[in-house]
Image 1 (cartoon, rainbow, N blue to C red):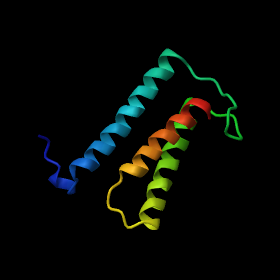
Image 2 (cartoon, rainbow, N blue to C red; image 1 turned 135 degrees about the vertical axis):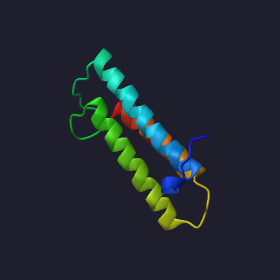
Image 3 (cartoon, rainbow, N blue to C red; image 1 turned 90 degrees about the vertical axis):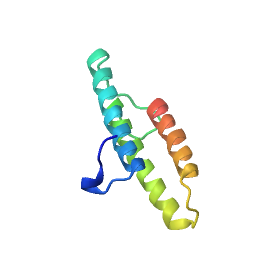
Image 4 (cartoon, rainbow, N blue to C red; image 1 turned 120 degrees about the vertical axis):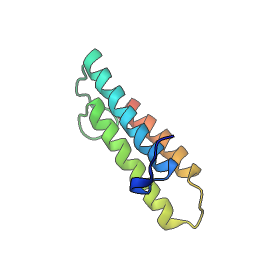
Length: 94
């Protein structure tokens, strides 16, 4: 197991950053294999694949912060599910 004590990381934090890193690697590979072109979908501006990923991550962050602010529930499965669903919609149709 990797020693994460130097930054007092928890396992969920390490998993979070590993997933973000994996998404960046996948997006880089997709860009190399199939270069993206700007398109206009449901969002009010032309976007590339990377733009839509960035907007999805921002939306997920604000959704989680809003969930923490608005509720006393200590589980984050609901905002995670909403973030994944909305992120998939943005990436596909945005």
